[in-house]
Image 1 (spheres, helix red, strand yellow):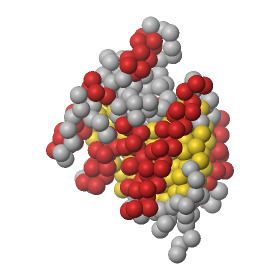
Image 2 (cartoon, protein in one colour; image 1 turned 135 degrees about the vertical axis):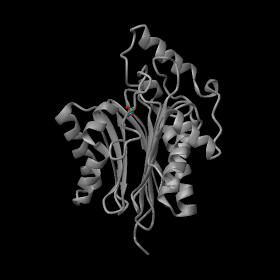
Image 3 (cartoon, protein in one colour; image 1 turned 90 degrees about the vertical axis):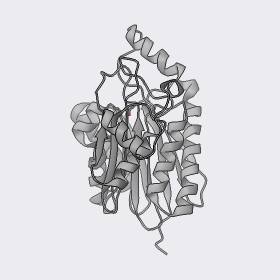
Length: 296
Ligand code: ASP
């Protein structure tokens, strides 16, 4: 027995979700974390658990990933996703991917294939179809809420940019293996071709069995400049307890460049933490043999 209690921590994006909607966002995270915990206990692999969590959240139109993803200034979908496992530091990502229902599954195919670590745009779509993924009808992924948000931004009734509700997960299995996964539509009204932190190793996603795993959310232009996920994991590597590491990484991110966002982290000992400097970040934590904690 390793003594490590397997755990999954999920986030549903840093931002400022209106008060009335906060409980439903937290419930969505709870469902995803519980489904991921089942997978974690079935297969015993942290990697399988984070993918399951993100697949569930990509299918939930409430969140800014897969179905429900936010739109570019052209009204199109350009999806970013990545996954990393901490044993071999293997990583897979897609950036500016045209509509596919589950970008995280394609990122995982990139990781498993191993030839390259990240594919973008038309090349990412080509890789996906070669791997047997079916492109999605954009109409099936674009929600009324996403259209309304873009219209508001274009009419100057909302700030351009941050959509919130990006999704991500970290997990630690009974063998102390960690993994992280993140998926997003990016920011509302982004210029076509804009790539955020989500598909960048060390920025949106990081996992190393010698340190821990992290999934980040917030303003991608801030997160990528501070390698936020890697920074949090470096603190874990130095022996800082998980919650303190999460708080310290977010504090430094805010202090150094006025970065705005949040993270979930897990260490290879199964200790977990989460932190944000935004009004909300929905989340859920599901540990083997315990009740699920969730909030926003
Ligand atoms: N980090 C994502 C991006 O900039 C957005 C978010 O987390 O809400 O693409």
